[in-house]
Each structure stands twice: as structure tokens, then as C-alpha cells.
Length: 254
Length: 303
Ligand SMILES: Nc1ncnc2c1ncn2[C@@H]1O[C@H](COP(=O)(O)OP(=O)(O)OP(=O)(O)O)[C@@H](O)[C@H]1O
Ligand SMILES: [Mg+2]
Image (cartoon, rainbow over all chains, first blue to last red; front, side, top):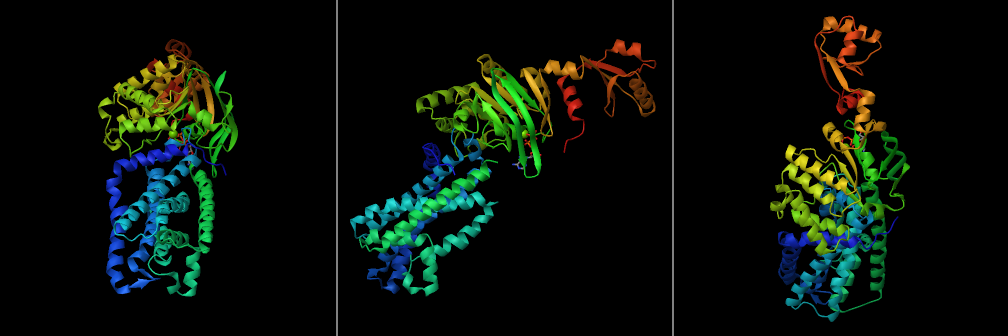
């Protein structure tokens, strides 16, 4: 494996420029939808659910929504978005004929995906603040966490992208991986309400530690297990990041 | 000094041998053409030279740098015009150039200056802010050419640069390539257009089934493989056999091209002196690179 260089920033800038031109077309996905879910579930369902873990339901799910939509943003960007650039537009082909290497391109895409997570996480956090759901100044660190989680989810997504033959393959990725995590990583109910086996699986799913950490920062309540969660995120990130550099190189440099 | 040197360069795709033991020496400042039928391996060869495709075997040196060791340094001085359009559809025309300039770490102000000038040069100024999909095929090719020059390359590598261009645009490109050559910029061009090769290339190599069959200046190739003139004999099925028999017995160099028989390395007068039954329906025309191409790669489709 070869490492990437500072030139990855060129790829990141390219994606940023495109986003700045087109963001309004995408805004419903990363702004309107999470806010709708937060309010509909939080206020609507919350009226029946009452208190969870000593919190109002809307306060309980808000950090989970931040974590999951950070995941969605990175995952969409580095699956459909990246695949489109790679296969349909041949943008990668053009760029690897410049001083950028495949590794730089992949790293640029991953950090851009993470930037999307950061933007999404921040937008929802602001909305949550406006609704006076945030109870701790530690919440200011949430965008940073969203960024870190974004690196992890982008790496996983682009790894998948580097291996699949067609657009349709992403159905598997979202139906079998992303969506289950959304429902079984403790976003909407505490993990303890699931049977033992689901709890165990859930602990390995990459979204779970992100939800726990986001919730801790959101409420300002910490415990030792969170260090484990952070360590898990970092390990998974390194793992998927490095493999995706290799698999993408194999796919592009043929 | 060879500015591009390849040694035993080979590329295999699974079972398929796309480039087979190619040794090229491209001199600094020359315009080198790569000719060959579809599937000959031209694009595969070029993709190795621009460092986006690793050779299965063999080595490449560009400006005395081993490409396997210094791909970045080499890519920084190459200008590449690919066969397939890979413009960035997410960006407008001008932004395509400035964004590309950024990949080469060209400062913003300079990038704007060069992009403006290149758009003017390729007569695309009024498309400055257009979307890529609003451009015609020929305009896209011109933009690709402009993009290939954004880093003021020492070597430009063009894969079918004028395919799909109208005659005006084609001449514009040839003229521009001529100017670049005058500035000492080395050019490696893949083309199917024999007129193009004969007009702008100092030397050409003919590639077939992954191998380089021959290389030299276009004139030298023509006189070596065809001679100055080609005699084309129209022969019906009745006379054909006899003519072929006589040409063979006279030891003449000819090809049975189906609708006619082509005779090479001989003038009309010489033929008249040699043959007893001089064919009446005979046409004489100057030999071209296309004749060389056909002689070496055959008349039928390779695949
Ligand atoms: N990525 C690839 N995977 C498998 N085979 C390939 C790949 N790229 C090219 N080939 C094969 O290699 C051979 C040479 O192809 P190449 O594109 O180099 O030909 P070419 O001379 O550029 O042809 P053309 O004039 O049609 O552009 C062909 O048989 C082609 O099918
Ligand atoms: Mg080709």
C-alpha cells in the first residue's frame, strides 16, 4: 500500500466546488429529511413514548439522528456519487493522468464525504439547539465527531464502490448494511430493549459507537466505555481507509 | 537523446496480449505517430506511458526518469489528450480548465490567464460558461486539447486528437501542433488518419496485434514498402488469373486487393516494358502512407 499525499486536497476542492454550485439541489436530503424525522418522531411518537433513559424522547433521538445522517451523507457521497464520477464521467481517469495518484483521489473523496457528514451533523445540531434540546457545551465537539465518523463511513463506502460492477449493487449496500444500522444501533430505542443477539451484533456495527459518543457529547455524560467506542471508530477507520486505497488502485490502474 | 524510451514493454489483460514487447525511442522535439488498426494496442501502450496503467513487463523512461519510480514528476510535464472524452461534467467549461490547473498546482491567477488564453486559442470563448453536455462533439475534443495544454507540457500525448473534428477545426489543431513543435515540444500521437500522420509526423510506427511492425519517416516508409507510385489494374475474373500469373513470373511486387490488383515499386513505363500482355485498364497514382498501412496490416478487419 502506498500512502496518499497532500495533493488529495485538490480532489477535495474539486468536490467542494461542485457542491457549492449544486448544494441547493441536494439540500432536501441532508437538511429537510433529518429535521422532519427529528420533529415527527420526536414530537409525534415522543408524545406516546414519554421518557427514555430519563430524557424526553426527542432529546433521546436527536444525537442518534445526527450520527445516522452523518453516516448517510458520507455513504451516499462515496457510493452513488463516487461511482458516477468513476465509471460514468471517467473523472478519476482524467485526474490520475495529472500529478495526483489514485491514493490522492480516494483520500480526497473520503475527506470530502467526511466533510459532507460534518455539514449535515452541524445543520441538525443547530436545529436541535434552536429547539433547546442540547444540554451540554460538549455538544460543540459533535461536528468534529461527525467528521471522524464520516471518514470511517466514506472509507467503507468507497471500498464497496471499488469492488462493485454496477450502480444497482448499491441496493445491497443500503438495504443490508446502512438501513439495518439506522434501526438497530440505538438511534430510536436503547440497545437494551433488543434481544441479546441483536445487541451483540449491534455492538459491532460501526454506527453504534458513533451514536453512543454523539449522545454523550450531546448530554455531557461520560463513562469509560466511550473510550472503547472511540477506539473502535479509529481502528475501523484505519482498516477500511487503507484497504480502499489498495482496492481502488487495483480497479483504476489497469 | 530519447525523451521517451520503452524497453520490452508488454501489457497483458488476462489472457490477451495487448502490447507485445515494444521498444520505442522517441526523440526530443519530434512528432511521433502511432498508427494501427482498431485493437492494435495503441491506447494500451499510451496508457502505460502516461503512468495510469502499470506494464505487465518492461520499462519506460521519460526524460531519463524511470516511470515506475517517478510517476508524479513525469505526469507533471506531460499533456494528455485521451481517446475518450473524460471532461468533468459537473463543472462548466472554464472551470474544467481551472480545476485541471489546480491538479498541477498552478496558482489561481496563472490558471485563469492560461485558461482564458486556451479557450481563445481553440475558439471556445463564447462557451466559457456552458455546461459540458451543451457542447458539440467537436467542441468537446477542442476543450480536451485545451485541457491537455494547461500545464504547458514538455511532451504532449494525444490519442486520436482530431477524430470527429470538421476540416476547419482539424487544420486549426494541426496548425497548433505545428506551433508547439516549433517550440520544441515533443509529440506522441495515435491516429487512424493517414493524412494527419503524413502531414504532421516526423516519424511513424505501425502497430498491429500489439507489436510495432516498422517505424520510420512517412516518406521513407512509403518508398520502402510501396515505392513512389502505385499501379492499380482493374481485372475482371477472366483476365485476373493470367495477369497474376504474369506478374508473379516477372517477380513483381503486387497485391490482389479484390476489386483490383495493386503493383508496387514499379513505374508504368517499366511495367509496359516488362509485361507481354500489358493490361489496358490501369491507373497510376502517387503512393501514400495508407498503402503502407494496408500492406502491413492487411485489408480485412483485425477483429
Ligand atoms: N481494460 C481492458 N481490459 C481488457 N482488455 C482490454 C482493456 N483495454 C484494452 N483491452 C484489449 O486490448 C486490445 C488493445 O486495445 P487498445 O484499446 O489498446 O487498442 P487501440 O489500438 O487503441 O484500438 P482503437 O484504434 O480501436 O482505439 C484490444 O483487444 C482490447 O480489447
Ligand atoms: Mg485506442
